[in-house]
Structures are given as structure tokens and as C-alpha cells.
Image 1: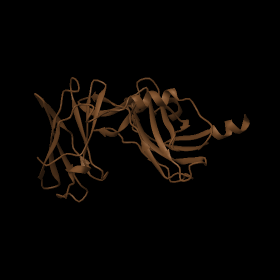
Image 2: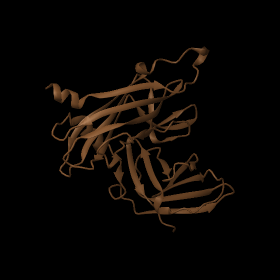
Image 3: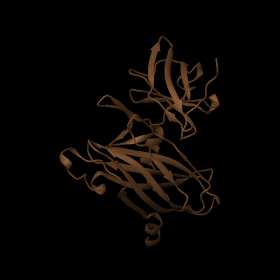
Image 4: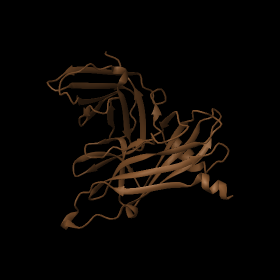
Length: 275
């Protein structure tokens, strides 16, 4: 029993790296009063991969952000370079919520985020030592970037609670096929400092107040605020992509990722054609 507890022990060191001032100059709350972070150890699947989840629990009213956080959000980053017997990690993001705060759109999660991840071991029948750093932002009326150091051993033959991870996996966006996407077309136009991309999605409505989020594989490219409109069966969004070089660049339409969000649903669309 003592050995099992040691294997599942998860060390989380949490600290604020930068803070914004609250109204009246009050000090922001302590990190441990705002967010609690742990790893749900999960299980090994039939392919020899380990299914686990990062869990972020937030104090009432606080929120954290999706991988594409919107205008004023802070995108999370995870670095597992200190890990052992780990060949790769794939994250399975649940459908996020679109927040409208003081006229600004942000995308993320309130109360709790359970982020499932599939961990691929280099040697299938050996434990994975998961070690790394999580950087995230949490916001209420003040936003606080935080760092969390994570250390955990995931054994081969022990399993943790499956229900929270399985529930989060079921909250994934629909695929393009499941949502009935008929066609995704991207019109690309050069601008002085980058590209303007008009995306037209021929698909049934996902729900009221649809928002289309456009992502590109290169994280150094700034993606502007989206304007989204629907006319009949066509959903259109216009966005601008501005690289650090500040000039037009070659864009592979297959590298674009579009997510349609509405009323608790999401649709994940990979790539588009030129017309």
C-alpha cells in the first residue's frame, strides 16, 4: 500500500510569476486560494498508452483559458521536457465557453478544467515519470499568470479513477463529419503586414451565437479578433494573420484549424480548400 501511494503522489509547486493590481491597490489573493492543480493518474489502454488528465480547480468566479484564449486571455503552455520514458503527449480539450467581458471576447473554463492527455511511453511496459512545467493564466477582476511545477510517476499496472477523465473525453468537440460539414473554403489575401483569411463553412447551424476560432500551427503568428456571420447554410468568419516579420507569408491551408463554438457545443475542423 505504501508503494502504491508513492507511485501516485503528485507534487505541485504553484507560484505567481506576475500580477496585475486590483482596484484600490489591494494585493491579489494567494495562488493556493485561487487554483488547485493536480494530475489524475488514469490508466494504460490496450495500445500501451497512458490516459491521464490535468485537473485545474478554480475558486468561485475565477476562470482559466483554452488553447486559443481570445482577445485578452492568457494561453496555457505545458512543457514536459523533464519527463522520463515519454515519447509524446496528445491533449484532448473539452469544449470551452465563450466569455464576453467588458466588450472583449475570451475563451476558456470556469470552476474546473479536466484536460485529458494521452501519454505515449518509449517503453510500453515501464512506468512514465511525468515532470514538467505548466504556465497558465487565471482571471476574475484581476488576471494572474501562474507557474506550476508537476512531478508524478504513472505506473503500468495501477489505475486511478476513470470517471472524471471519461466524462471530460465525452465533452470533446464534434468532428467535421459528425457535424455535417459539407465544405470548408479559405480565401487568402495579402495585407501589408500579413494575410487576411476569409473562411466559409458550409454546414448546419451548431447553435445560437456561433463563434469561429481560427488557429495556425505557428504560435508566433498573431491571429486577430474574428467577425463571424451566418447566411443560410454558410458560416463565414474573417480573421487576420500577422507574423513577427510583419509581412505576407506562405500559408498552407491544410495547417489551419477552425473550431465552431455555440451553446456548449463545438466542431473541430482541420484544413480548408482554396475554392
